Image 1 (cartoon, rainbow, N blue to C red):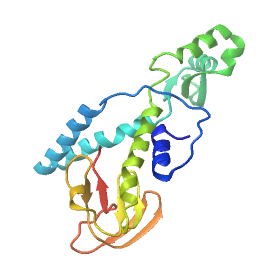
Image 2 (cartoon, rainbow, N blue to C red):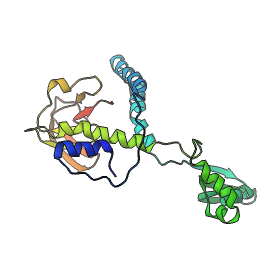
Image 3 (cartoon, helix red, strand yellow):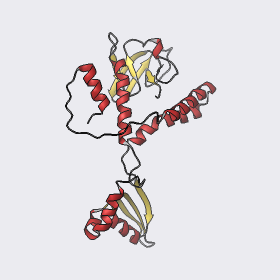
Image 4 (cartoon, rainbow, N blue to C red):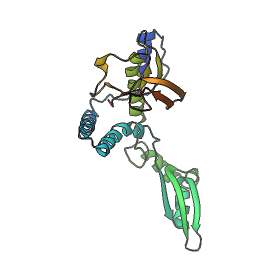
Length: 236
């Protein structure tokens, strides 16, 4: 499955003929993360100037992790200690992932489950089953607390952004990820800096091994700072 933006890129850059058979339509937001990104990005830059490594790491974490959070499964699993009777009720109502008797004498069990109606409930209480199913179509946070569409579009726009840098004429790209690349020659200075959308130059690679996605080993020239990424894109 592809996003509309990726398909447009393929159409406009590579003249790919596209036929749409089906899809999901989402309303486009406007600047929904602008204030959030600017706030933590400014915090990160200030921490760098102040040489506050803890603050810099925290702000970087706040910038990087929302994408992954949006892309997680819709439902969290719940783990709790319960009595045997409570465990039976949960078995009847929800889908159980794991159940362990911890202390039989004190009637204590560990149970892990998701808030998804069980097939047992469907058979013995169809009305309750249908009520749970209907809740999935609401904004009930017990059921929906992710947005795969946002994660998918972030990936798409990152791919589009990186595309122009990994296809620079006479500057071969040896490796790329969503936020980094290793090129044969340095980028133009206007693309390198500490602003949003710019790359951070880490160093000149003497020898590199690209083992698998996100797994590399680089040996840098002595005057360069050591890093697993030779050029890194600022969070955008």
